[in-house]
Image (cartoon, rainbow, N blue to C red; front, side, top):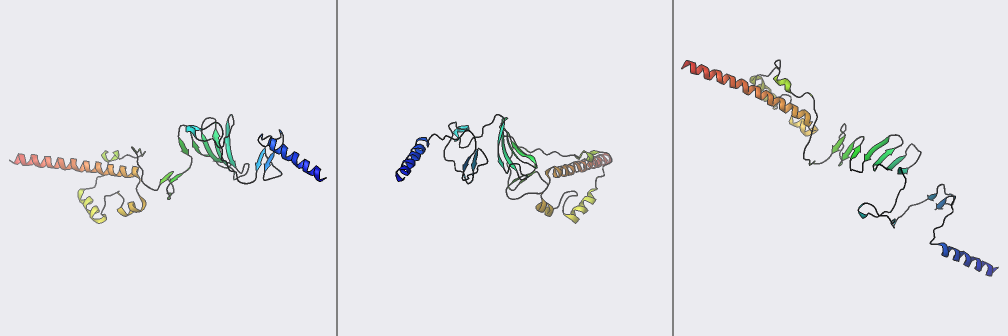
Length: 230
């Protein structure tokens, strides 16, 4: 009996050793690691560590440690089928998608590098409510385009009421800022809307233009009067 046990052990060892490198698995059924009741083709109960690479390297020679192959799309899915489902998806069109079961796609990155965020984006530690993009820091850019409505061409319309210089002088002495321009404390606390501020600055510039034109007319009238008196 003892000799039979030794022989069987040797046979089992020889069978395992001779097939250890072949990685042969049954054509049907599931394979489990850390479980005797696998639910999927490969069911791993525990952490996974990948130290090798697949033969086909990736972009710029990056090691291909994990590959997803499908003719249309493939994804890494968290809690599939549950309300908490989340998905990192890769499509055959070259785009990358992030989404959830309840909200569909919320972020998309195209293969050409175009990033679309469907809600808000925050850069840095501070988020300002009500804005699609919040940046807690400096922004360096070549150009900024702000869309606004109500551009102040109304200053040059016939019915526009221009304050007299005396009224403007009293307002400035009383409030220490121009009419319609926010106070320093408000700007320091809340910042400024560039589009709205540019509108107000242009309004003041146009009003100043009207003051200059009016002064020019008054000076011309005085010069003419002086010349006639001579």
